[in-house]
Amino acid sequence: MLLPDNIHPENSIYYNSSFILELLQTNSSIDFLNLYNEIKDKSKMTFQAYILCLDWLYLIDVAILKNGKVELCS
Image (tube, rainbow, N blue to C red; front, side):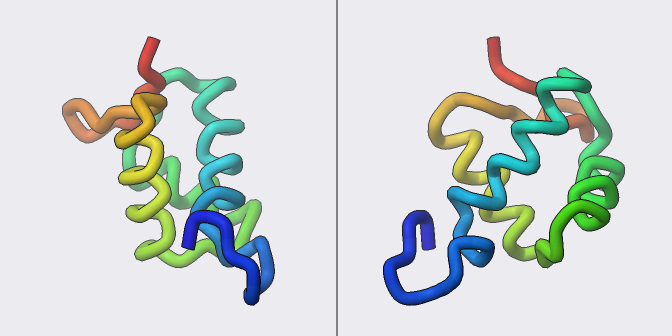
């Protein structure tokens, strides 16, 4: 869920996407799996939630996957 009203916010895509954005702001381009490993150290995000967060960030034109790297859109 993007903004849940009946579950903990740490389970939402909106909340978990903030961790991805935080890392992408320090590294504008990072390997897809390396990014997940760094995210997993900070939060207990599952790989499925990670993919959904990347989908969400792509849909709102914030991040893109290019040549195996996740990049911030300019």
